[in-house]
Amino acid sequence: MEEYKQTNKCSQRSNRHASGISWRLFGALAMFVVVILAVVWIFQVLLLNRFYESTKMDEFKSISDALFASIDDGEELRRQVYTYSADSDTCIRVFEVVNGVADEIADSDINAGCTIHHIESDGLSELYIDACSNGGTVTKRILSPAEDDRSINAVHVSVVKGGSGREYIIMLDSEFAPLNATVQTLEKQFGWITCILIMGALILALAMSRVICVPMEKMSRSARRLAKGDYSVQFDGRGYREAGELADALNYATEELAKNDNLQKELVANISHDLRTPLTMIKGYSEVMRDIPGENSPENVQVIIDETERLTELVNDMLDLSKIKSGTRKPELETFDLTLDINAVMKRYEKLTEHDDYKISFEYDVNVCIHADRTMILQVVYNLINNAINYTGEDKSVRIVQRVEGNTVRVSVIDTGEGIKQEDLPFIWDRYYKVDKFHNRAKVGTGLGLSIVKGILEAHGASYGVKSEIGVGSEFYFELDVTAFCDKEQIF
Ligand code: ADP
Image (cartoon, rainbow, N blue to C red):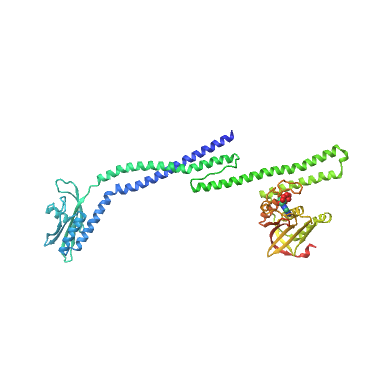
């Protein structure tokens, strides 16, 4: 029930998310459309008349300037008047003021709606006076005098002084096209354009959100399967790059989760196997000794003691490893003589050397001091030596070699065993990894030794490794910084 609820919640969440995307996209696109239309509307509709007016004014000014440039050359002036008048659909009259009387020296009357050619001399005088009182130029809107033409004309008058010192009046007149109808048309069009574009934005938003959501929905379905423990699930992020990257990351996470899950299952299986075996032995031997008086022998008691030791060793290793892995056991650094301590360790193996013909040697040139957690580093040394003893060859020889290079000391534990296959080398540091996959009890060991070694050395930032050759043997080593070279005499 709980699981069903969770799934349901999840799908609700994902639905909410999907609709969120389409509405968000629609909002953004609609906003964009509205802003663009507003800008276009302001320029095309609201300010159209103003722009038109200012363009007209600029045109009048440039014609007026061009005519002024040739005002003293009658022939050229007439030519210019004719050209400009035709090019810009403008009526032109140019007067020269002689003894207070305006005498027309050039003109062009190109259409019937021309105001300046049809207004009386009083009207012309009024325009002249207005121009003079306005600093030399004036522009006015005047209703066309033609009976059948009710359009508005723009009349521009400029009063200028020629090179000869004479006064001239330039009059320009052109139709001021009524733009109101255009503006109304545009406004109507804008209404339609806005509706069409908003609809377009909605369709585009829905299409885009589909493109975005489909891979997301597929991935969330896969994630739900993964949550139920199905590690065979594949995340499919086809559609666009970001979804692909997310799918790759999730596929990678799935692989890692699967590995972890396998490891955990293996761990539980191995631990229960390792704990059950000595416990069964202890129980079995104890029962035999209780029930059959003759079996109460020192050999049987020894079996119980051995199995108890093995159990203790296993539990201790597990505790050590979990402390190191979880970070509860942090290295307590101190400076100590590593060479001296390895020598002390060697003493513990003396019994093996004496009774079991093991040849365990320690080679070194100089005593070195290191700054590390003493107990932890000695545990590394023990674990490596124990492994070497367990796996060494028939000659039962194990060499511990200490070499100093620069400021680094390398401790190698070398055996003459069967060696480890190249393909197994990267995995032997994993918990419970056994080269012989049958979790064989014949070779003594908890299967945790190298993981503990790895955990300790990594906590110290030390480099470590293994070199191995089939049929020749293996060399496990680690390297640490030397803090001082100690006096060799000290150890004796
Ligand atoms: P174990 O308790 O099984 O020795 P370890 O973690 O110490 O567990 O070692 C992991 C595996 O690495 C061993 O099972 C063994 O297969 C391999 N191994 C470790 N040391 C040696 C060695 N000196 N020579 C050959 N194989 C080794």
